[in-house]
Structure formats: C-alpha cells, structure tokens
Length: 123
Image (cartoon, rainbow, N blue to C red; front, top):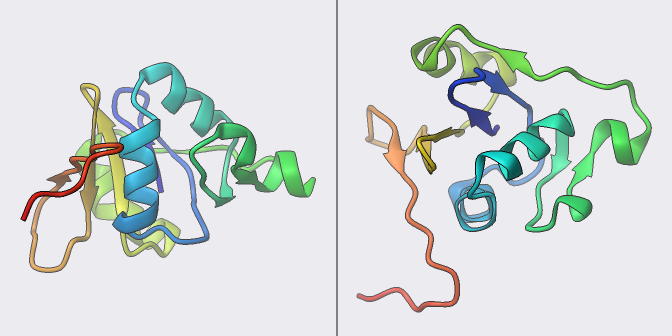
C-alpha cells in the first residue's frame, strides 16, 4: 500500500504488493510528489502499473464506491497500524523524494528502495 509522508494518506493495493512488483513500480516510476498524489487520489487499487492510466482503481475502473485514502497521525502510527488495517505483507512510504518498504523478512525497520531503470544489477 502506498503512503505519502506529510499528508499521512495511504491506500490499499490488492494485487502483487511485493517489492519485486509494487516496490519496483513505485520506486521506478512514481518519483515526484505530484505523481504520488495523483496515484493516491485514485483511491484503493486492485493493480498498480507504471502508467497511472493502466492502474486498476476500484472507483475509476470498476465503478465501485470511492474508498477514501486512510489517514495516519504520523509515520510511526502508519508503521504499527497499517499492516493490520490493510492486511498487508508490505507497506510503502514516500518521504523526502524516496520510497521505502516495511515488512522485509528479518528487517525491523523501513528499507529504502533503490530502483534503477534500464540498468543491469551488478553482482
């Protein structure tokens, strides 16, 4: 579920919230506050894609009632309540122009996402 620090808004993402998909999409293509705000404004998502128009939003695309983004008092409240509220394995945070993920096995804190588009990973 994407979250934008400062506004303390979060939305639910149903399909493929793993860092290998949702994390890569968020970190690689939703890099500005304007892009993140536009994504959150869609409300809850069934699927996230690299193009906002290709994301599947419950309200816009499935004509379901608009699900208002959830709000949290701060990052700490989001960290401790978000996983239970959304039934999520992973949570994402956009803060100071960077994405982090929470829920990585054996990692007790947020892990910064480092996505490089069009480059091979070095071993």
